[in-house]
Length: 97
Image: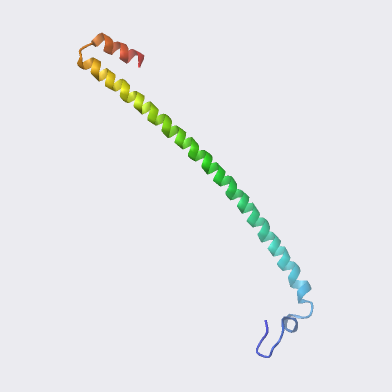
């Protein structure tokens, strides 16, 4: 970085600053790139897992809804049979439900 007198990096750090700093910077850039790629791969994997879990949750939600509908149907039938006083039919429904 030039100073007020117009000094250059070579004047401040020495003539071999490129051979000293450049390899370090290139190594640092390579490490950052490698780390970025690893993070990207991890992100892709996590997004895939998230999608799979969302699909499983949706499937379980659908199954729960189906079961609840069946429970409601059986309960309605039981109530109807009980209100008609058909104890034999009610016992049959309770036993096989």
